[in-house]
Image (cartoon, rainbow, N blue to C red; front, side):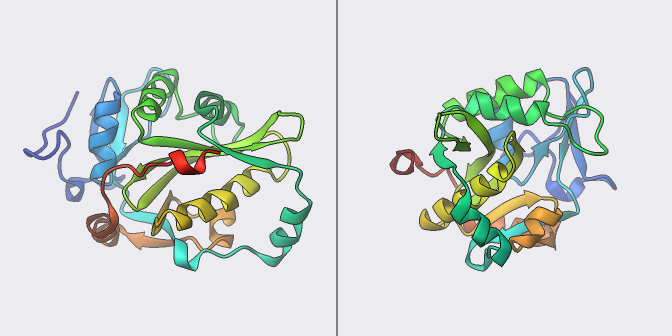
Length: 227
């Protein structure tokens, strides 16, 4: 493990990130390491099962401010027709496993390795990670996403769908729940066509740290919203 942090973190300062945004690498990932990393704006991004784990603080970050979140008109019409219902934290392992198995254009394999699944499942049990799940009327898991609660910032990690529209439904419902809970920032890491449609835009790493200082903190309690 290559890490040398200050007294507040095992990780080097985010400002020490190199050209590719890597601040450290390790052979393992644990829930304690995840808790430390997200508190400082850092996240793991492995390349594959047998690779060392890079811990990243990218120079640019995609974010959605919840008070600027908007739903495209075409999707508003679709939402009325979708047959899905939402559950929160009902089957976190099924969601992260499905995210790992989801084919991604231009991507060979997945960064959600077996070690990551184990660590994030423990992170979930400790109250940091959460899943938003879209179900069909017969109880089939149709899609969803998961992410990390860092005070009034929610770090979206990955999403999947087995039925068209399911991940969009889960994302919209997630944003509604997070806004109701007082979350101010949805960290999307990157800006994609989907997240841009909801209002995602890029900010600098320095700007992200300012948001983290203002809105970051301990995980929020999602129990009242699980239903």
